[in-house]
Image (cartoon, rainbow, N blue to C red; front, side, top):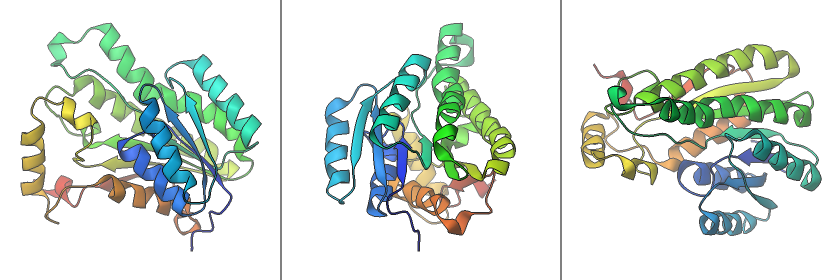
Length: 250
């Protein structure tokens, strides 16, 4: 159904959490993977072992996607190892959790660089390896469109990310490249543990979600797999929300 055997995907920030789930889901569909990490080397190696157990190839690369030199070196390794790239998933994210009145320019620039600008740099490197087809996806969150406590810098960067996706979709569409965003609801990952009100977030999400459970990394990965397939060929420049209906409630 998905006809993805032999394709090559780069998933940034894929040593853990949502990125890992997406990488594993693509591997199950026959995709060769590039696992990117910045700090968690052992987790990245464990993810790679699980990917290779699916019978596909996996390249593990340490790179800070907010650093242009690191991104250039990352793609140098992709060219040497695979000579192509069919799928790019911009998943790596970071940012400080502070009230707006406590943010400084360093906090702001860090969030914008790694959560939004990185997609631009990655896409510029990826497109020449995609030929006349390809899939580019960005992973966002509800904080892009809703006010979340202490999420100012990250939320603003996610909003910028979603806007960038729409502009890339228009520019790259004529090249046969689909560009979309996956916006995940409350997912209990390592990243959420940094929130001081983590349990409150999870409890509220559970109570407000019509489908009665939290979104999992696998839920997000399923949508990523769908967007990589020919079934999603006419989905372009969209933000697909995966939250069990949480965001539709007043």
